[in-house]
Image 1: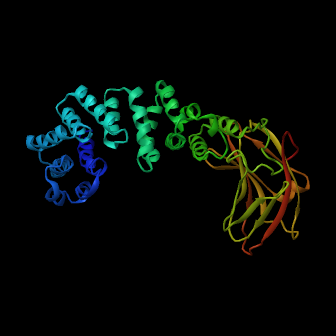
Image 2: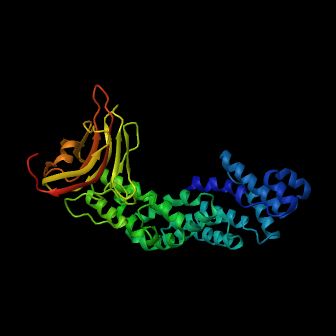
Image 3: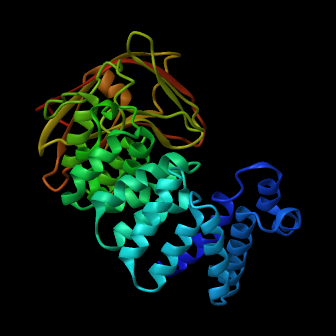
Length: 389
């Protein structure tokens, strides 16, 4: 934190000086020229003093009493400027006097409510002593003042959101800043262990399938093997109900609900699959390489199932296309069947007890002589029971 504080002293040069006329314009980039114009102007004295402090900090030299004296002399001439209080606060921090530092930073923020250093140092002071109740609102102000502040400050908010005891504070902060909410939730969603925090802190307005952090969170939960939690969150955000042992969107009508518990459709060098207006799935396989064209993650209880499909082959050839059931854990194949068999009468398969999640894929399979295939599926049905595999 000392390194951070030292770096922020230099930042004062960029965010807290230069307010009026030619003197301040010169002071921003050419303090020496400004001093020639009006050496006794308090803003010039502040710039010169802050420049000396920033240079000493950057070079690893101590801040001398003379540097501080020049700043405090300028403060006596311009008591409404926030800069001297910022310096006094940092000085108090290094001297081990956090109470005085807090008071100084509060005074700086009173003189300029948009002062980035004042807000940052206040937040830092509060967080140092574990006072998230006061620290988080300062982060919220910074998020609105700093360019791209929501993304830059989201990790601070996310770190406190991991503690359930801080949820009421974090929720109240995120309620007033949608950008910060989305950035903080995206940061949390990068770790499946934060799923409960994400759900608890999401505002009602953000509970929609298109929420940008939803699919990363679902993917991380699936990768962690927490399939039930992933399905629960997916169903809540999608407002979808899927009976046990069934497919979602069997008629290919719902493009809004996200993967992986809705269809994932491919558009690649393998081929492409796209929903048709009014329902149905149009699939084109190029024939040059193996790959999935459509897939959906299932949580089928162990037992026997039957899959059937209705549709029509465009051009008469569906030989390169097949259904495959793959165990999500370990990516191990459970069963496969030509698409033609599912179109003709159905395909039966068994889900083993050691496979809690399965991926159903419509695949293209390349051969020595590439064969293209095109089909329009009207629906796909999955049911418990079935005949011979």
